[in-house]
Length: 375
Image 1: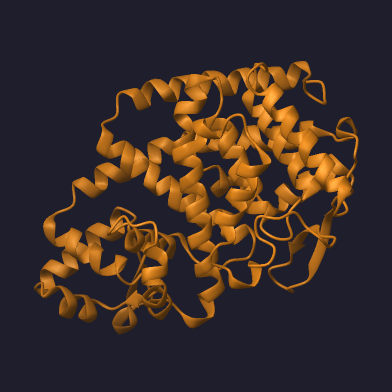
Image 2: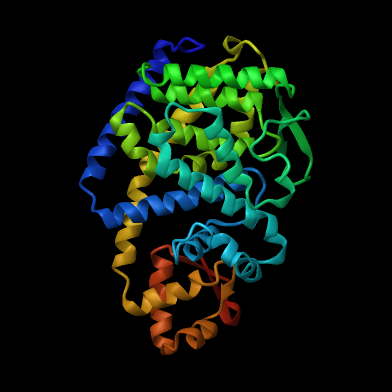
């Protein structure tokens, strides 16, 4: 069972979260399939963008959205390799590694979203396959992807201002200790998930122990956040399982990134422990309860955005498409007029509508006014 006691205050928080999830599930049951598809796709883009940026990638959600659009045009599993050079030429040259990481994270998350039920009971074989999916486009990982680490690693936080790297958690040493810890963790997960009343608590312990082990040479943070979503999708709680595809949890972890790292350290004291009962999981559990609660609230945001999209005039939709083809650029009105072939007054009205509805932002003044896409 669990390696820690869930006290009364945590039980109350978990019960309130379950009730909120059930209410949102009832809302989702009344939503049409096109709107649900739109919501899940936007959540997927947010999850990819946030999870990779937490690890210091640099692509915005608008750029991730553009990449996902390009990679779903023909539906082929090899679409990224087919369009890799085009994508890299379209975006800034200094984003090459981030683009490969986004493509790999996208592949891993799509596998989790579509195959989660088939991945239970969970296995080390499946875990290694997910790691291979994640790093498949990052050439330097060829010799270690899908394999456990052979040299020591740590959970590292990078200071965005100074570039300084600080150790958050000293993880398990490579070799037998890591291998044994991973076997025990996966056995524990498979034996606990279906019998424990609180999936969120099980997922929190599962992911924290995974992060403390840090079994792979690279990609552990992204894999760990993917595993949290996997646990929700495998939940015996039908409302939580149904709501999981519409929860942009990593978006809220990214927003609270400093607290995320502080929480990991509070739980562990900064060091791996072979005894799973030595950790203070309640800190991480509370952090994840908050992230899920905020994600549930996002459903209304996506619903409002969907309504705003379908209500756009053909001209405004055409102008928005112009921005989506240039996700990193700030466009002047004259460029949009040239690209769309629309009259100046029509473009002006469309820009006003898109700005008011939060699809683009206006930057600068006078002749220097430019507009940029907001995801």
